[in-house]
Length: 256
Ligand SMILES: Cc1cc2nc3c(=O)[nH]c(=O)nc-3n(C[C@H](O)[C@H](O)[C@H](O)COP(=O)(O)OP(=O)(O)OC[C@H]3O[C@@H](n4cnc5c(N)ncnc54)[C@H](O)[C@@H]3O)c2cc1C
Image (cartoon, rainbow, N blue to C red; front, top):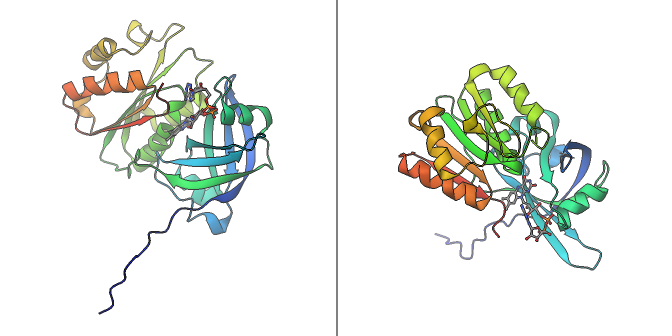
């Protein structure tokens, strides 16, 4: 019998992908579409919720690597050969400011294939819940679209300052039109008036407890996805745990 020693796991490698489209989503964010050639489709296949990583050398020679969740679905990759992501500009941010300043169709980026465990294999019998703020919508858009496609139900609480600063608002409205009440979308507004007092102002743990008594029945939800700033994600997670939530996934984009 031959025993294979030192069997190495294949490390993911960098690939060049071309930007095929750039469009503004809001005043401070944009959507970037990447074209994936047929020979790389398998390499870039992903589970809804995963992210890709870009590598870029700055003018001073330093290397910058940043991750961005995929907003598109595996089906879009299979049918159209595209990956879409949403980048929110961070003041003085090295990658996001570069994307805002210069990224244009035809540019070639160094990209690491999809990674991450903030994901699921959508199941038609499940009810998914998501609580997100700002650019935290990107992985949830993918998860929600893929889950709704299979026949699942999705409840989404999405917090933004105003309607104008809401990334992917049109795409979510389109999902609502297509899937009717299998998508239960609640926009929270922190700097303008929401649809009700419950949906106006920051989603603190106390406010979220009220949401769980008045608007969303956590008993109905099989699997939760939380994505956004540290404080909101951890606060909401604690309340869900108190309420006996069965499965909770979290993704933090930034910890100060
Ligand atoms: C798994 C994963 C997925 C992600 N997906 C997305 C996505 O879909 N869309 C998206 O826009 N971002 C996403 N991010 C965040 C992204 O990777 C970058 O951190 C972000 O774009 C800032 O990078 P930068 O180079 O522009 O700023 P940097 O040069 O890294 O930072 C500039 C300044 O901003 C602060 N800062 C850094 N990041 C943030 C932030 N997110 N919020 C507030 N302040 C910040 C830094 O402390 C610094 O002071 C994701 C992060 C992770 C880990």
